Amino acid sequence: MISDFESRLAEVLGSRMPAPFGGRASVAPPAAQGADPQVVVGVRQVVVAEPDIGSRRLEVVPASAEPRRILRLDCTVGIQVVPAKDKGRSQQLLGVDAALYTVDAPDFRDGSALNDGTDRGFLLNSMSPLSADSPLDPAAPNMPALGLTLLARGLFWPAGVAGEAGKKIGEIRIRGSILPVELGPARPDLIAGGPTTTLTIRVRAAGTMRVNGGAAPPLPFGSLAVVLFGSGGRPGNGTLSGGTAGVGAVRLFPVTDGVASVSYTPPAIAGTDELVVSLDNGAGDVGIEIGRVRLVVRRP
Image (cartoon, rainbow, N blue to C red; front, top):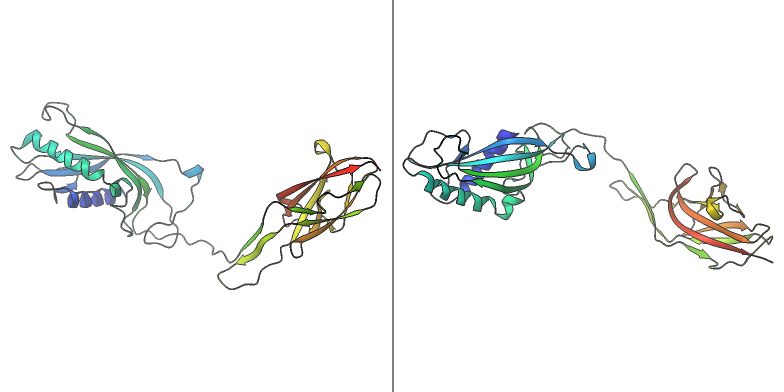
């Protein structure tokens, strides 16, 4: 993985740099000094990056439709300029200038200069210059090599390793509702000890459907899970009826053409109830809440 990255970086960097450095980039270690300068690249340090939100999921990477297990790595990359014989520090500085300008190009910074859609064992997200070393006397003892340092971030894997085929999703069911829910009548006249009132809940269904790669008819919307609460989250004062019983105090009401009919019997004394409307979770209980309606019961 790392050696493939080094080789690709040397290839692209050498093709971009001007004379006399163009075409003279190679992977570390440098060769003996000769008549031509050298640009030497190599990864100095690798840090395993923390995955996104702690996820260690497989990733789909170039040249494979199947997801692969990858490593997220931050690579510190060194680029060293070795001058030709008798050229010295002045030529090294020219090489550092050329390399620094080259790797600051937008397609180097976002990694696309090295990503070509083939399986190279890596997919860069970014690559940016960090610093450059230019000691006044590169030949003095304990001096750093004259060159620059980059930080490359991306996904890495052994090139050519097959992806891991998972279970194919046969069908996805989608259900939605356009908010807010509407109650009819908008302000029901509810009297303490009075008769049962039919409330109409309109959910304006955004469509329930199945996605399975073919033309499939829409699915019915299903039911609403409705529950009644009094003040402070206590059980409701009134009573819900109709539909079918769900879990605990929940009642399930079928939705036809975007409408569900709910029967509400006011309590014997005046007060306020809150009607909480949710999508059913498929197990007779509340799922995603889509609205709340305040029911005011007045004195006779």
